[in-house]
Each structure stands twice: as structure tokens, then as C-alpha cells.
Image (cartoon, rainbow, N blue to C red; front, side, top):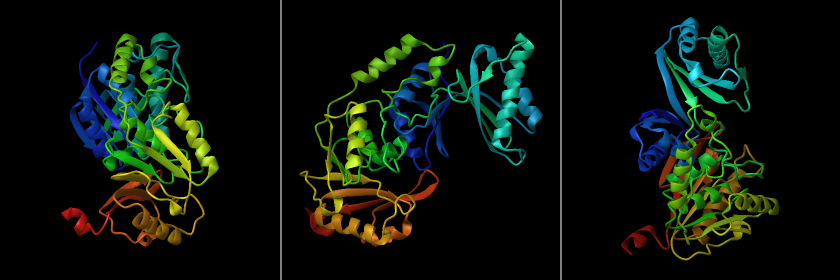
Length: 386
């Protein structure tokens, strides 16, 4: 089997630094941060490990070919020149996703994907008088064609379904947070399982589950039914099993508390279902309650990470709601670091606390800020002196 090769892990805007740190910790080489992605080098075993163990990756793409393109004919000919029967049988299925950022290509990404599909199909038709079919839902081979200016990169998608689909979430609330975003928020907040964690508006429990996996060193995609690379012609199942078992051996048991609060009984039920699906009941405590009438119940420092309602998601009196968040933190959650993400930047002004960090993020298509409030026991000065 080949040695190291180039890969690209895609992520969400604002999580590039966190993903690069994860890759470094796993043992990736030649790491380079880009916008919404990080490139790196590793071997097949590392590719399997990256898919299983990265908390903040959306996909892991294996670089197949890079070439210059100036028009659609260049694209067609270069893609058709790849020896596709090394990767795909004529009776298999495939799908192509395209991303285009180039002034020379005025056509849309969908058209580029179709042109690329024709090149692959014609390669097989000319050689075997038969062509593989397209299956957008569950293909044997998923390809990614990325054109930036005059450079085209063709990738094999080793992940298949997006890695945010961990396999544990059967129930969601009205506005569930993406699993990769939840993990990214925790890691940006510095969460590593060495402090108690509270999500005071826990919804269907995604932040809690991601926290439990981080705290106990559980690979986030250990519950996945399948990865794209399992359908590849060169899939090394014994190597994959070895990587899988090695990651499981690194799981630890963490006794610090992970607590979720929500006032909606339906949210509590959904969270309980998802926590059970993830086999994490022993690590997470959930309770029905209203954050605005609650008090910090753990001793010592604690980290709060939450995703409060935005005006876009739920009908709320945003101004009053965010003022109550600030009042509750100040009165009932001393000795905590509180992080929240919101797209309602106007409402954020009414929290009434000074932020110690403000990080630009995106939640779906919404421009957001991820903000940190440090809530001290007494005054800030007294806390630092002690």
C-alpha cells in the first residue's frame, strides 16, 4: 500500500485553527490551514483514524489529481485521462460534487459536476462499452471537483456522508445545532474534560454528547455505520479494524460532571434518547428546569457552553431574553466561564456583561458571534489577587 499522500479535511468557518490542532495531535504531517479546510499528509491508516477521531472535520478528502484548467474542454480531457478503473468498477455507482471559484468558469457548480461526470462515464464507455451509473444518495465512489482560479483539484471523498452525522441523533428539537459546530464550540472554549460543564439550554443534547466524547476521549464517529473508504477497491479492512481497536483502547473514564438543563419536557426526552443512542448515559446528567431560575449546582469552576434561541429560530423577546441571560449569569453562576453563540448581535448588547472574547462564526448561513463572559466570585480584581 502507498505511503503518505495529501488529504484535505473540510470544516466550518471559524474552526480551521481547532481542526489543525486536532490533526497535529493525531499525528498529521505538513499541516496547512485554508478557509474552511486544512490540508495535511498521512497514510491510509491515518486516513481511517482521521475519519473516526476528528471532532471538527466535515469530510476527509484524498487528493487524486491536480491540474490547470482554462475552459470546460481542459476539465473534461484532464478528468477523462485519469485511470478510473483503478478506483471504480463499471458495475459500481458514483457521484460528483463540484465547487467553483474562478472567473474563467461562468457556468455553475452543477454544470461542472455534470461535465466531470460525462468525462468519467466516457472513459468507461470507450474502454468497456459500458458505464457506471450515478447514485447521488449512496454511491460506491464519491468525488469532489474543486476549481479555484485556474487550478482544479480532484479528490476522492473518504468520508461518504458528512462526518457531522455521527449516528447517535434520532431526535432533534426545533433548531438543532450541527454536531461539528457543537464540538468546535467546546474546543474553542478550551473544554478538555478537566472542569465541570453545563449547557443551560441543552435542547436535544448535542453539546452535552460532544462534550462527553471529548472528556472521555471517545472517537466521535465510533457509532457511524459506514465511511466512504469502505467501498474503495483498496480498502484495507484488517488495517481499519486495527486502527478502530487502538482508538477504543485510548477511551478513558471521566468523573467530572456534564449537566444539561432545559425547560421543555420534549427537549429533555429527545436529549435522553440521543444520549442513550450514543451510549453516554453514565457521563451526562439532564434535568428539567428554567435557566433563569436555576443556580450553579457544582462546586468549583465550571464551563457553560450554550446555544440560546435567536430571533431567526424561535419567536422571543430578544432584548429581554438576553438581559435575563446576563442577570442570571451574574447572580447565580459565579466562578464560571460562560460561552454562547448567537446571530442576534443587537440582542447581545443587552446581556450587560463585558465579553473577554468575541469570535466570528457561522451557524448554517447565519453570521454569528461566539462570546465569552468570565463570571468571578467577587470583583475581577479580588478574584485575580486570590
